[in-house]
Amino acid sequence: MFPLFDAFLALPAVVIMLCVVMFWGTVAISVHRVIVPYLCGADGKKLVKFEAEVTSQIAVAFGLLLSFNAVWVWDRGDRVNHAVVDEALALATALDDSESMLTAEQSQQTRLAVGNYAHFLVEQEWPTLNDAHAVRTRPAELIALRKCARVTGDADLIDAVDAAETAREVRIRDGLAYMSPPRWIVVILLAILLLISIGALHGDAPRGRKLALTLVALAVSFCFCVLLLHARPFVGQFAIRPTELQAIIARLDTMNTTAAQ
Image 1 (tube, one colour):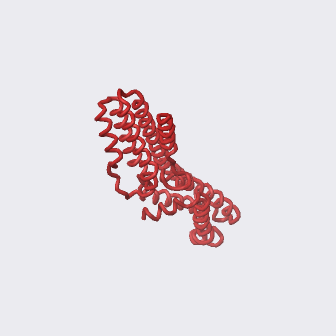
Image 2 (cartoon, rainbow, N blue to C red):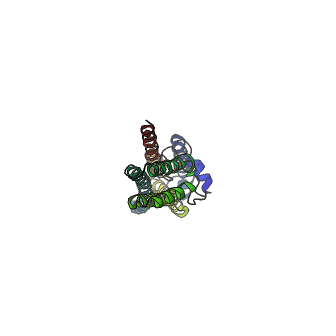
Image 3 (spheres, rainbow, N blue to C red):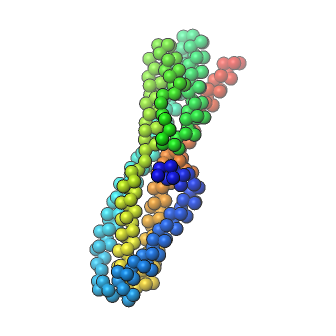
């Protein structure tokens, strides 16, 4: 199920939005042409009276649950973004420490270890972050960096490496998390109930029903588009990029060029 979901989220944003609008448009048309005539009769008089308060209560429930899910998605996205920045800052601190070491050999070894780890993150680990089931063990490059930090005995360098590893763990743990299927199912069911109640509320007015269902279906579509486009931090057109880590690699290249001169 999750691989299919990720494959869908990997499509261009325009395609995802069109699919969502088509889905809820189909639901709205079904409500207008099938469900409402069945519930209210051909003339809309079968139910006699349908209170607007029912629709209001369903709308409130839908809005609240949608908000809870949106908050979870956005908070998770913020945590992952902060983890990426913290990871890059920790590696930048390691580079700063390498410039103040007692020997040139230690400085060079530290820069080499940081560079190998940064290249691993950008070139090898990052392309696999769209696979939530990939094995996430401590890479050899990180082990080498930790060993290098301990050999130097520099407390600040050791703390920077520990901070980088902690940020990596947060990035992976939160970035690969899914919103649970029951959350999606309940929100979808509430949206369907909302469309049905809107249709029943306008059971005796086909033209008004068409307009009301169109507007609500579009509003629901926009909400789901936002959720889907941010559902997975490392999948899709708006996926998080390793920009900060690439800046670390660029800084390393500059430092190595300067040292060579």
